[in-house]
Image: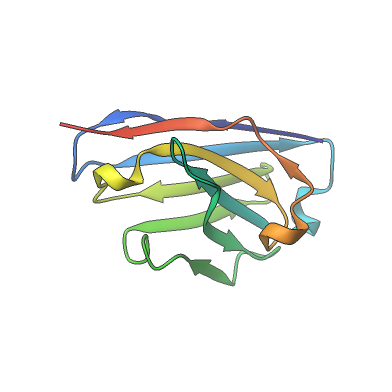
Length: 117
């Protein structure tokens, strides 16, 4: 199993980024997927999750209305569109296999997002 995130970077407040997660080594379409972030000095924070078919999505209150999770099962890809970014969104963003933190069995290495003026 391999999960590889990309798309992070440095952006000004109010800017946008689109994160991608390339999945391999398993049947991607059979698993719920999540995005989790970890800010310096803090524990992991769940951001969003999506069910196998992409029809059910949930978001942390801190990102609701600004972030959109999606997936392309034909391409084995998971995405996170992030708009109206805030400095408090600065973190290392990971994709994870599973629906909830207690069931994540694989994480990617993460992609860094820095929101700063």
